[in-house]
Amino acid sequence: MPTIDLNNGVQIPQLGFGVYQVPPEETAETVATALEVGYRHIDTAEMYRNEKGVGEAIARSGIDRGEIFVTSKLNNGFHRRDDALRAFDQTLADLGTDYLDLFLIHWPLPGIDVDYVETWKAMEEIYAGGRCKAIGVSNFNAHHLRKLFSETQVRPAVNQIEVHPYLAQDELRAFDAEHEIVTEAWSPIAQGKVLDDPAITGIAERLERTPAQVVLRWHVQRGDVVFPKSSSRQRMEENFALFDFELTTSDMAALTGLDRGERTGPDPDTFNYIP
Ligand code: NAD
Image: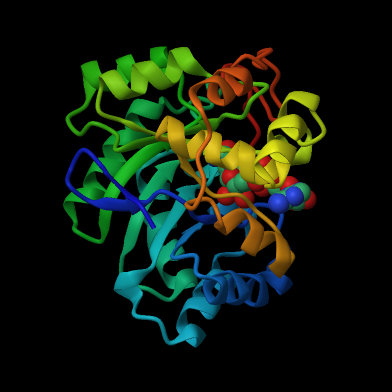
């Protein structure tokens, strides 16, 4: 499994397993299966309400905690400093672990009365406390990041944003890279919406791979981190088998050429949802 170096030297496995929309009562079993398949990087969030299940699966697996990279995200209702510190403690308790590998601000929330700069300063405190190996953001645009750069100390290690062939995000990815921020691509197969595209199915047929493998391989070759979600072992295995084939330069260009600026999720510049 290839790893990518974050800007503080921490290594993150490039491929992981995402648990958004995995029901809390099914999470322990689903993550246990993902660990059996070989995933060693789990992406959860307080908002998904399934951190306990993730923790249970890790504990039961018998795999050394140090071998599994665990990411969680601060919930939208906890942007004030004290709330953020408390929420981080709760995340560790729910996951049954004494540290996180990566903790993210889930959304910038432009319309709430707490500035995300205050939230980032709380993240810096959490990082300084040593119970989190890296901190980052999610759904931040360049203007959000520039504001952090000018008003805070620690550079985010990652920016987790929606990326797939219908939303290639090349400008924001280049901005991240220029500032030593690793891009993580969420909804990497657009929750399945890109898989029937003839440009993708054509390449899949030629390579004798599935459309999902072709799209996930495109992300990997672009250098982004991905964590597709699936509930079935067969698809988990399919999505894990990305490192024994390659896309050509023209395959890569064909997928990137499908970009039409189409989101499957909310727009970070207007999204203000508090659960
Ligand atoms: P995804 O692009 O990973 O698609 C998942 C869906 O695609 C599954 O429910 C399944 O129905 C289908 N699928 C999976 N593998 C398949 C295959 N091989 N063939 C056909 N269909 C397949 O979408 P996602 O779950 O939204 O995103 C992945 C992860 O990204 C999430 O679990 C979560 O960890 C993260 N995420 C983060 C944010 C954020 O705001 N930071 C938002 C959404 C998702």
